[in-house]
Amino acid sequence: MATEDAALVARLRRREPAAFDAVYALYQPRIFRFLLRLAGSRQVAEDLFQDTWLAAARHTEGLAEDTDLGAWLFTIARNKHRSHRRWSFLDFTQRERLAHEPAEHAPSPDRSAEARAEAAAVTEAFARLAPAHREILLLVIVEGLDTPQVGAVLGLKPDAIRQRLSRARAELASHLETENAVARVLAPGASR
Amino acid sequence: MNPTPGDPIANQLALLPDDPLPPRAAAAVLRHARGVLIDEGQPMARFLRLWTGVLLPTVLVACALVYTWGAFRTLETIYVAAR
View 1 (cartoon, rainbow over the protein chains, first blue to last red):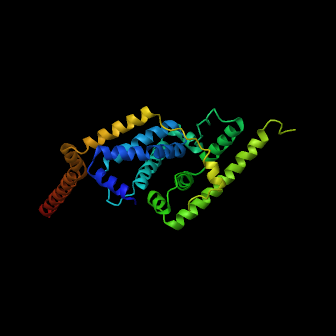
View 2 (view 1 turned 90 degrees about the horizontal axis):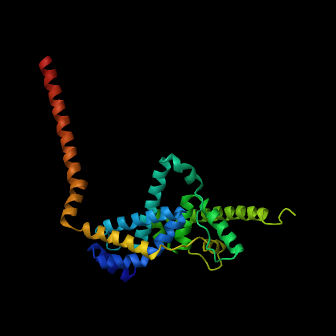
View 3 (view 1 turned 30 degrees about the vertical axis):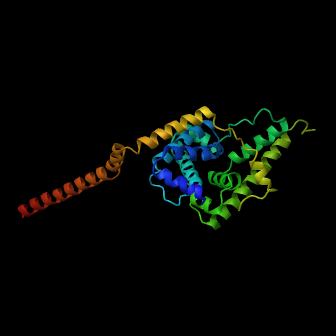
């Protein structure tokens, strides 16, 4: 862990608001992006993002001296998302939505039609992954966490991480293939 | 473990939506969290955390034990008196 991180942890343990501001500035874009992609819904991501930082603010005193701040914050965010999924599953009105987890994000309008279609296909394929697979792909490939950090966030040993990552990659590749096949069929002039 | 530059899956994942939180919303969350950070550090908040987390559960468990012990004692007294 970097010395800078250790100094921030020490100041957080003393509940220094300036230290909290620094941690927020460092990690808020990554935590929001992680939640947005994990939840597949902007509204849910915003709620979970707020819950994550409130939980972080409540538990600064109990931090261990050698806490890895990134892993700690991603763990809280991931747990908030798991808890949200668990409770939403009890809500019958949301079951159908959760079963499919449709991706509600429209790709940005400034991209070309082809790029938009590709981004939509990736978003759709990603949304169809099992939550555990989405988590590991985001943490390892998108956020670039190393093995000990991913192990801390997911509570897994290195072998289990490698295995889950490999399965997640295979599942995503398979979904992407399906999405691309559908796109080819639906493309103008495909039936000719 | 980390992706290699030519990793096709990493390239695909780079296409996922990345709409950052608007600055105003981000500032509102920070204000709220800062409030919690400061409030939870107050002596009264610490006492309330201790009360709800440790003291109250201890008192409730102690009451339950005393009640159970008392109930057994009463039953024992009745049983002995009936013999």
